[in-house]
Length: 106
Image (cartoon, rainbow, N blue to C red; front, side, top):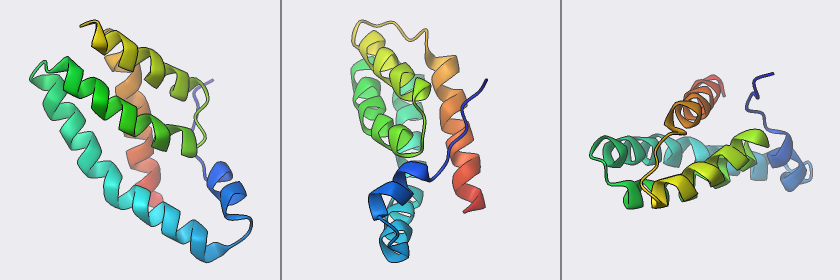
């Protein structure tokens, strides 16, 4: 089963405060596209240490959007990049693309 992004964690974090939830979602919507763009730029330029830093930042959003397996994938990908091993890129990009699609619907 493929994980899908959701707002469950954000809703728990907001404790029913719709303004807080809206603020968190807004921050993610604003930051995510630029972070993804920087990630892809560094990855395409084979700057794997910088890419690992990008993954580190993105993994927190991945976790906030309900990915459990995806969060572990991000951890493993980050560690792999530090060792010049980008093999988890295909799995990671699927996660990012699903988040992008999800954010566009909010």
